[in-house]
Image: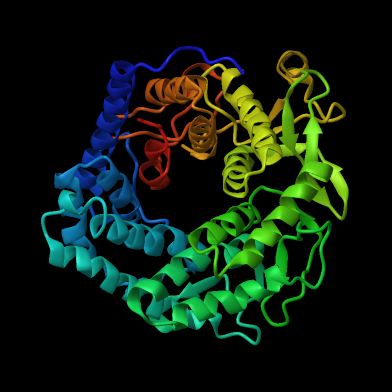
Length: 453
């Protein structure tokens, strides 16, 4: 693969500053008008949202990125505010998975950075310590979710009255994407309970009763007995982060978590063998299909595009060039879903099944190798995240340029009065309509993923 340019420190610094300026702009809008709320509707001054239980998701999600960007004023504001969160106050239904990755993950990662390599960014050391204390408070509030016959957690809770939503179905993403946060909390706090809880629940995924192919599981399982209740799956919604966490858990501590590596290798090998799917109209495009009981469906989406970066990461850690090469193919193909649209942003969903092409998209499909099944863009990070891994693995400046192209598209199409908004149509002029909604992961992931050096 040929790089588009040589390394240019001045250009890279200017671009990094542009991303940092966008972060400051969006955070200032949120903090000014929706401080303590979960999200802002960035088109106005009075539209705040609370999809994550009114615990201030955007603030907590922004903390680690503000630390990495070395923005002391923002870091201090968040760190000083976090102790005011009352995690038992919400009467809304709560997702254990979302609460873990956004709040527990946000506070613990902030704590690790601000007591470690970025300690100089925060001015109040005692407030930084409160991040760990609040992490313990949150885990203690949540841990009754594991009180099931198997130890597999309930999917949803009501913390104010210590109850849970009716039903026992959960997904492999929800069950298998909390291990790093809870185990890290055990290691930091010295309390082994948190790690024990998530390792017990993970055992049903690491030693599954059934598999569709080696390493590839159905999505749903029953928390009463650990049985899988479907044979559908892939690397998309409700499954994605389970596969992501397997290799990352091994990276976290290879001496303790070799089984996570082994399961990731099985999943990766089966994915390359069974799910890799070529576009019939454009050579060189490789996407990951979904499945239902070993029947392949040629549909995918933005969420699946994290897989390229995950394969690259696994290949680097395991010294497997085949995984890296496959990951780079996936990155290139997900780039095509951005590069082919009117806005330069990728769709929520897309397909390449020649028997299912919408009449109005037949020309688009012939030219670009895929068609759009869901046209909105929700400020998702997966494609840009995979560019980051591709650049780190190869040093190829092309991936930095692709990331910058995506940033320009985001800034052009999604920028609003007080931040950035999701849009309805990536293939319409101006992105169609603004959805007046800014996800908290804009701060935690999207604006963190541009490689600076």
